[in-house]
Length: 337
Image (tube, rainbow, N blue to C red; front, side):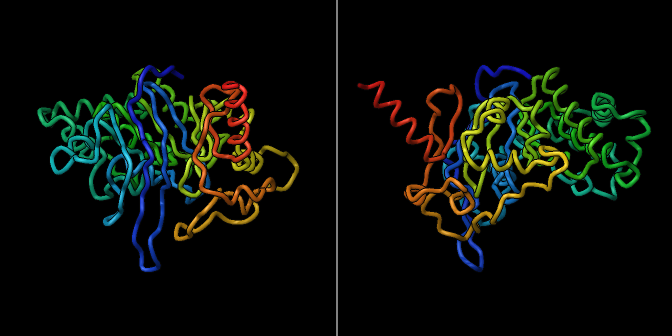
């Protein structure tokens, strides 16, 4: 894992609302986080926490009618004004997405070679078809596909799930993007193949310097992969910081609960599920969104919504828990006094 020197991606107080037949759904709530160059950042949380929406917002792929507020900068560029050709170029060259289901990411009626060639030429229209095909074959080899020449002639249904996910990663890499967004890329794979895909992403990050955002609901999956961990709940950031530090000393009850609920944490015992359910996106939240499920809940948790604040004795750590807020306030008073 690499040390970032500046940011390739920065979200500042990003909110996403979507009008539905039942009312306005708040999908993201003032989400802020950054990704440094050469850094792997994991977004973790239960289904519905907002991880995928945050990634889709970066590529401007949200559902029609979605209202986005806040700022999203990619490589220093504000993506909000991008339209038409400029938006297509941004998606083709700068940031690429690896979706959760590789079968849905590829057209079943087109060969893998054709789809890789189209992806390469979308990023660089000056490439001839032959040059793009050579690049496609080299990239398949780069991601560990055996006999890439034969695989270029194959169709998606002729390839296993693990190999197909590598194909989807190759489709992103032919554009030489600065930023790779991965939405639960290992969920549909067996444990062995999961490890191989994560190892591949680490290798690409290390050798090519690509910054990666990896959405996952399984903290153990990214324990040794991500430089930084951003924990999301109910569309908001609950906690963030260096991955190993967050996992060793969580500063938000939700993070602690996620860790306790992870399979394999307590061998021989029943899975420790988190009681209750996340709030509906249609709900009006007036305090900590995790409070109804939190065993440490206090009356103050029902106060104004909290945003992550620095953890006073842990540089680079932020948490939205009221206990940390109180601790930071006391620390500030002692410093000023």
